[in-house]
Amino acid sequence: MANHMQLLNQAQTLCDKRGVRLTPQRQKVLELIVEHQNSISAYELLDLLRETEPQAKPPTVYRALDFLLAQGFVHKVESTNSYIACNLLDHASHCSQLLICDECSHVEECHDDELAKMLKLKAQQQGFQISHHVVESHGVCQACQMKK
Image 1 (cartoon, rainbow, N blue to C red):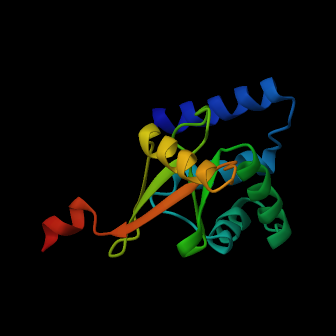
Image 2 (image 1 turned 135 degrees about the horizontal axis):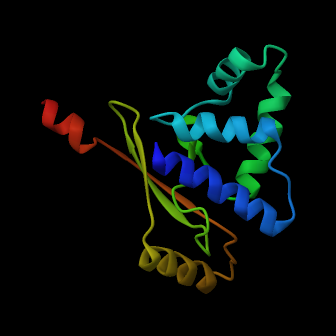
């Protein structure tokens, strides 16, 4: 729980530094994502948000997600159309790798600066400039492997 509070406090500090507002709704959506053990879809977020804000509608969640993505506080897991909290909010290049378990749906974020450099170099060789990247790798996590 302390780690959750640290991430939320860090998000607020970064917003203050950047001159953007972490509104109560944006903060609540971020809290829900941070507290969720696995990746979470926008509609799952909406259901959870409605527990405290019954009037919440899909655009409320999508606007909050757009803000959180733009600030680098969450990642979209494209292959599952879901979201996870970023565990390194002030990472300069904000490039990360996601390890996605196909059995339990757990998503683990990791950062490998060497991999990011290699991808950037390969892109530059093609005349392409990367603004950010998220590499998704699917497989089976250690916990699920041990169940077998």
